[in-house]
Length: 207
Ligand SMILES: [Zn+2]
Image 1 (tube, rainbow, N blue to C red):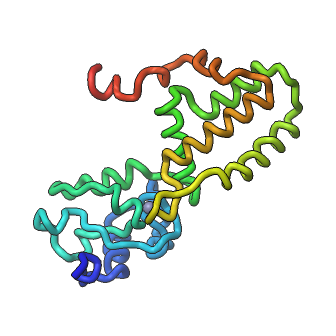
Image 2: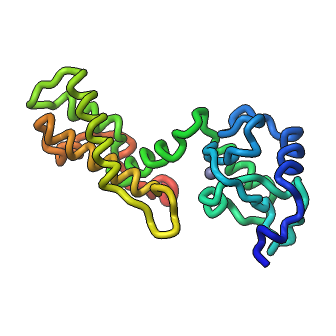
């Protein structure tokens, strides 16, 4: 029997419990939609009942030990014996807009890999352009290219979504194409300096 089938507590019970104990302010989901949107990413997805303290660590089948997450967030969520950690995690990722969470995670991934933000890359290219284009042309190019790039990215087997590395890759492909369009060698993006230029692990591990 799968874990899903073995949970007796209903989704409705889980929602009505947490509405009383967690302020929706700062969450990715409005409580009014908590039975259809993931509590971590805020996307409308089939929701799974996720243990706060895992069953394997003695977590019980009761509303105060369960939250509702999409399959993807469920797989990412913490499995620890301290019940505060799940809500720290959900709140830590609290995001104010619906349906942009994973796009933004892709932007974070881009920054981690390329050591500058996607936004700074776009601005750098515009500032150093050899080919002068007006705002409408730039907007048009980016919209068209983004549309085209949807045919150049895919998903892993068994995943029905673009993972963050795929998003980051898509943004990089856009930056490459944009650099070419504007006449800027994207190797020059290394000139963008700032905190972001450090390797991603430096501060956390060694400083
Ligand atoms: Zn989610």
